[in-house]
Length: 349
Image (tube, rainbow, N blue to C red; front, side):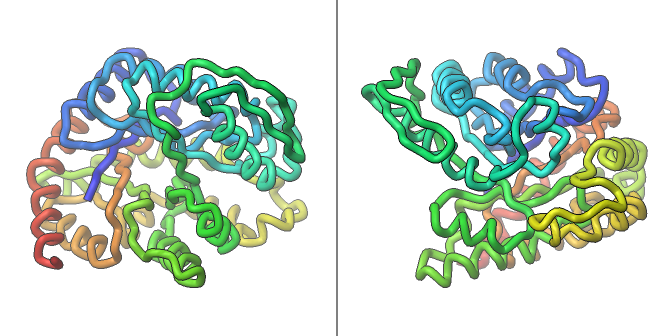
């Protein structure tokens, strides 16, 4: 199993020193990936600039965007930015993309919210076309160009592309059709319902007689570990509650009390869930990894049995935890939990 780590960028007050420290500690191992996600109208730093900083001060880890909202951007510019980052990082970029769900972000950038799913599909094909040896031409519904000469080319040919999905079956059907990897887990929900997400992923592939292997799937999980179980379960409270309040303020996908858009019917209970969201609900969610190793390892046994092979950990949700506490959590997780997971996996072989 591979374990990655997110940098807590979606919170106020992120500093240069904190980005540097997180990046260097994740790069120091044994975590495989460092991850960042994009938001425009949140109180967070800009993701491309922050990833450039991480690329400059790391040597080993993969650099993963958990999501770039493709239909908000120029495909040619994203192609050039990602290719440049891949060159400057020595071929370590992983591009996670999504179609977006927050209309106010599209408005802020002067981009239409309509047809964003179709535009995402086409945008990925534009990226693939742009990362070719010669000049590129493309004729699509939304984008067309002839003889595009885009340099530098990425080191990886092509850069790996993964797609962030939540819980709509159509998203998983599209993944199976296109063959892209999946990033599953909604950070704004109390329980990301990872079991259902994985079931939808596997079912969509089974319908097409595709492999049921899960090496192309990442799960996003909350985590914090300490030998003192009571401390590990109580200490993250202030930071997580800060995160809850930020998301409650900034993450509403449609107007409260207004008509629910057709493609958001699966989220009709959004406001009810967020109005009532508590730290205890997150703490006690089935796959939240907060507690002592003795509490977390049995949960990891369940995760292994479910078939997960890649976990992206949010070790400082909310970003308000003391650095030494997070550092100790990262070290303890790698020292005691990860070897235990390796033994669990070996026992299944």
